[in-house]
Image (tube, rainbow, N blue to C red):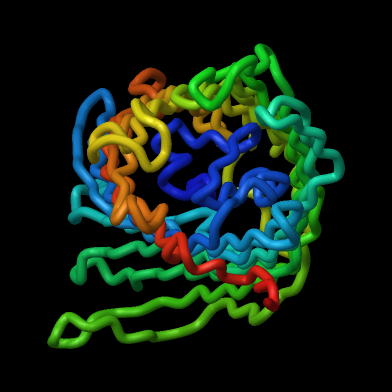
Length: 417
């Protein structure tokens, strides 16, 4: 299904991709839907990332770059702070590659070129809601809070792959093209739980920070995604202008139907925070060895493994909200992530290590909670051992969170005098 994009907005991506035990009053954290009830204002979020990669094997190097839109999410608080709603459209995975290999024909009659390409990916539209089951607070905001939430998603998209063999014109062989398309679509569901409590209670007033904790858990429920596969195998040549001209179709299968049965995914996280600091750790796992492919003539292109992601992240805001200059009101973020990938290549399970850093700058901070989110991530995936390819990458994140003016209480009932 390609490379998973994570599904988080930039505020969370700058902390390594945290999301299970994270709340943000001006950001929609879709990884755990129980977080929506912590929103204090309607927020529109979007962003993009630019990824520059260096690929290296034991004998060669190459570079690549791509730009991905991280989707759009809208978070809406309502019900006197006990309900939260989220609507979004986010990418889930991306496929994009071009590989070429040249071999010498027997007898030295020339070279044959093999060309492999892939493109596409999966996206998810989601509608989520959360509700505060229990909330008991005193006048200093000491107490506990338990919220639950659920996302109903709809996954859709296609993955297109082609393999071409190009022979020299003088050897008398026809070129061969193999094209396959896998279209996937169907509903998915995620449920989440978050519990907040006190580690050290406030004893005076707002100047006394206190110390709190947040524990979270999320479950991505098993799902059966409908799949439709099309395969075309044909021979072709080139006209005088160098354009491919089909000669004969040796195999065609249109719309072979089946399903992809996704395994259960789950995550746990724990956060400690006060008015200035937030420090969080989480683990997310999904055993892709349990993926079942029920599409005639199709199987997973490589061995799969149990995926596990470990993240530690933090954020810091020097001043309280709405107080101080621009840099004191900004939120500084950083994170570390280690992933055992779901792909096994040449008997080696891919591993990824990454560090992220960035900040959220307030926009019109005296009248809104809008932000510009900026940062980067640097990491490495794979290895050059055993004939494999190592990727070293650097990503630039740019995003924006837009909220209404503090005086405009959208989606809240107005009292009648």
